Length: 270
Image (tube, rainbow, N blue to C red; front, side, top):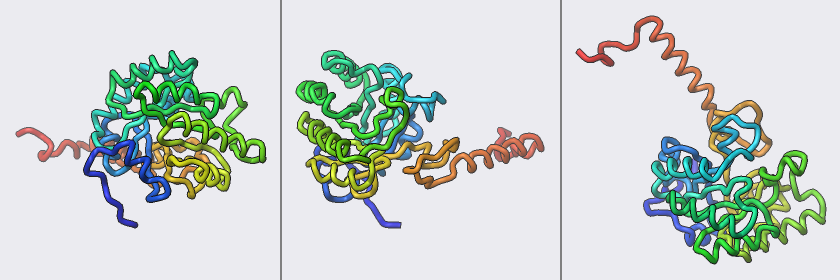
């Protein structure tokens, strides 16, 4: 395993920007203090993703997340993580106009210690991103396959398969960068196209299902560590079979309770 240095100081936006074309950046999701504390300082960024509606809430998409639910989980994550950069997803319906988006982003900033918000959408969101940045809200862009648009697009469709779409993706990335985003998530895009996108902008591009020649990677923690196994997207690698480990430990607990092996004298007050 290659050695890497954990962060000893708070990760800043300037640090993230400085890593363009350098050491790949790491981002992972978290929704509570317990896991945020485990991830903290080891990863560069923790994303409080609206994916929590699926992996945490058991829903079938991300659309049910609200600003209040994102604030609730961001507070928990910030309680556990003090060093990694914390990013909060702007949920579906919260970015309808630049005025409404700013109102919602200010609420997130005032009620949590989030360092930035993430907004799905390319050129069509540029004016909104610019408005937030001009009002001291740091923004991460998100282009390519955008889960909040999956229902209107008829599913989770990989992008970058034709010349017209490739051109649109690059235009989106440049528009988001010009609007002021300090980082861009690119999801579900053909690998060679994602590489083109990364080379077309001067801010880091974080991939998820976008190959390994971008500036970093993000995964949903329950996918990466094997706690969610109903299906596995092509872009996911399971670094741990967490569900199996927990199930095994649970059965051991149940067995020891049934046989009165637990609690032993060691675990009892005398």
